[in-house]
Amino acid sequence: MSGLLTFTVHRKKPELVSPAKPTPRELKLLSDIDDQEGLRFHIPTIFFYRHNPTAYSDPVAVIRRALAETLVYYYPFAGRLREEPNRKLAVDCTGEGVLFIEADADVTLVEFEEKDALKPPFPCFEELLFDVEGSSEMLNTPLMLMQVTRLKCGGFIFAVRINHVMSDAAGLKLFLKTMCEFVRGYHAPTVAPVWERHLLNARVPVCVTHVHREYDEMPAIGTENGGSRDNLVGRSFFFGHDEMFAIRRLLPPNLVNSSTNMETLTSFLWRYRTVALRPDPDKEMRLIFIVNARSKLKNPPLPPGYYGNAFAFPVAIATSRELTKKPLEFALRLVKEAKSSVTEEYMRSLADLMVIKGRPSFSSDGAYLVSDVRIFADIDFGIWGKPVYGGIGTAGVQDFPGASFYVSTEKRNGEIGIIVPVCLPEKAMQMFVEELEGVFNGQFVFNRGSKKL
Image 1 (cartoon, rainbow, N blue to C red):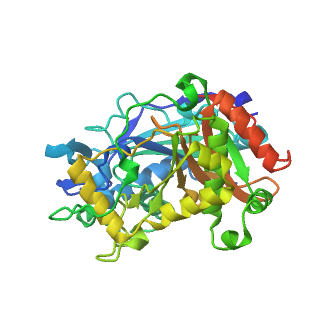
Image 2 (image 1 turned 90 degrees about the horizontal axis):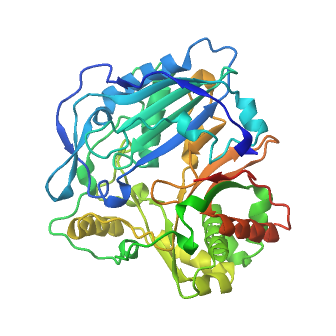
Image 3 (image 1 turned 90 degrees about the vertical axis):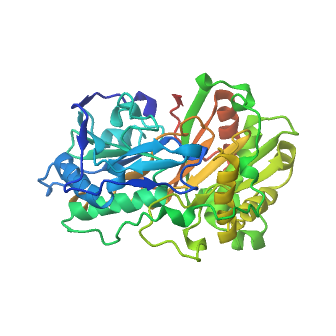
């Protein structure tokens, strides 16, 4: 069980890595999509790499150098956030740099694999991405924290945390792919980074044309199902060919054929998570489905190197009774409807809403947030290849445990699938597992280790 794997990490003193060459000193405004309240936190990702016997380079030194070269092009990341009037965020491009930690751990990658610990929540995660005091503040602190931890076997763990207002998953991937190119000996990024945050600013005059239920004003509430944060547990679940086949059998064939695996899996998790939580039958349950809007924006289009936030939080809403009593088809149709609601006009309306409403946060009451981050599976550092695991590092995110991130994974037998970390109160997690085992005829394999959050 993952909970049994313990190890010690020896870290050197955190240092600031600055751009390898002088960069412009200027103030850059974030977009009206970037600086909404719901993105004002730091989000961590983690990558595990195997030892390559032919690699004689120290991964710490190689990655540190590639980071400095990447910051020449992505120099706003080396700056600091300031808040302008009306809560408008801007980056003061000071060139001060990002936080970097060099570390060594007395554990091997094989030990992670043998203990079934290559999935969130990772053992000793806080040691693999150390929260330097003060570094997770929003303003006047480094916008990125990076830690490279060498393993006993010669492999290494690469962990990075960014201030979410700077980039979404697609934007972070552009940054990391540029680092990978410098590791492989490139002299410039193949995709030049583009700031251009004004492309997602509110219109003049503002005009909210859509109903954005995801930003409903709702009273502050405690943890779902009456649980406190003290009894929340995080576990990861694997969905491969057999699991997806079993889920599709719950749906009419015509709907299966017109739905993606992500839509199908998301509706399944939303429904059975609600069953496990046992909320009041009349409680409004929400699914927040993160949709990358880059392909939707045509007038003008976003440049390929745009690394800001360019996504929406469309929401599907149903009562607990509807969700649990009606067949899975009901949930799936709501998911598809929410996903398809994101258009160019939707994004323009959303930017306008942010300005009118004072950059609110999305409503988390009764909400389950889902994000597909499988794009991190191919962060390839040349001689070390692609990661054994690349994705989110925790079962939930800061102040919002009700979130799941889809991570691409390959089991030791070679089966390709998706790992989904889920965070629930302890009793609800037991019920969730029982419900899933019922669907999969008791054959469902999951990470039986749990971690109190």
